[in-house]
Image 1: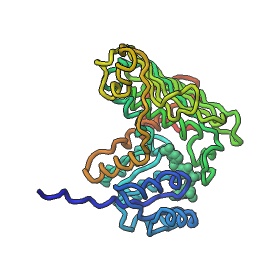
Image 2 (image 1 turned 135 degrees about the vertical axis):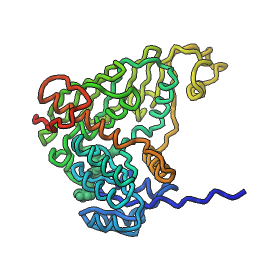
Image 3 (image 1 turned 45 degrees about the vertical axis):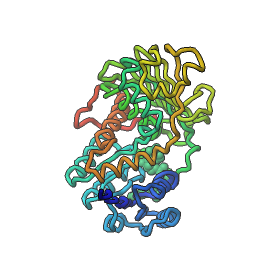
Image 4 (image 1 turned 90 degrees about the vertical axis):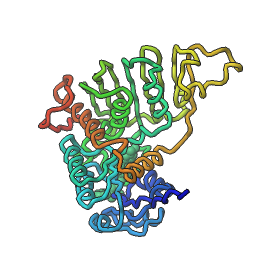
Length: 375
Ligand SMILES: NC(=O)c1ccc[n+]([C@@H]2O[C@H](COP(=O)([O-])OP(=O)(O)OC[C@H]3O[C@@H](n4cnc5c(N)ncnc54)[C@H](O)[C@@H]3O)[C@@H](O)[C@H]2O)c1
């Protein structure tokens, strides 16, 4: 029998050499069996050179054209948000596949132009919603799809990270002209995507965004109410001032509840995934039956809480593997440009809600205004 031909690694160029490239994408590409780091571009030449040296890329440059003219197959774009579009459009025109960090753009119109550019060029576009690749999220999705908790009517998600906790290389995040928004577009957007993924499309939002602590007058306290196409209701919250990282997503269904978290360091979150169900063990999907100790140890399980300790896998490695697999097999991205656009739309609609003090229906009209509120 002939052995499968070995596929060569996907050659990756990094667009940007800031904090997330150093903390996540650089190390992930360099340890991935699917990819190889070929080049690094950053207008700050010292940063590009340091990152290329640290993770073994042959090329470092201060010119995007030089990176795009090299033999790379794909780019990972992680620059300040307002610069994503130009890089993605240029990469697509050069025939390179694109992985773009969230948020895709500053507004829906920008996201749409980026999707169109990639479609026209016939290249893949994947968006960096890495939280979809958390093991606990993947198990929760399978449990929801198996109907274990029944129809979901309410979803709560909280994501808070003090602004000094993250070692950003630049200050673009709190300059609204470059970021398009502060906490909502940086943190909450992950949970907008997660709730779309787990509960479905959103049809309206009502937002209260306020400023309390950050030196810049930008949103550091986010409260967004959402309605879903299914009729479910959601609440998304984020903050940038509280010292303990706050994280948790809870989904309330007619027949059960799911709680998803990242860490187990906090007394309110004993495990990364907990599921309350009224089902007997024999009616549960395998992934949950496995998570529960054999009935012989305890009493027979006929409903209650099940604590799941999912394998601790790197979501960055998993999303890169998905990106490379889509490129090699000519398959659609697992997290598409459209997902990026829809999350962007919720952010943009939230700004309109703050401006007008009312619910904003989705989808937004194509000519909807982009206004970042003043606080
Ligand atoms: N998925 C996630 O969880 C996650 C986490 C962190 C950051 N991000 C995203 O990654 C992006 C970068 O964030 P960061 O924290 O690394 O920022 P950062 O401030 O640490 O670094 C930004 C880098 O971009 C460089 N830069 C400036 N102009 C550029 C250009 N025209 N082209 C390319 N690079 C340019 C800067 O010199 C700097 O090195 C943002 O869009 C952010 O939302 C995503």
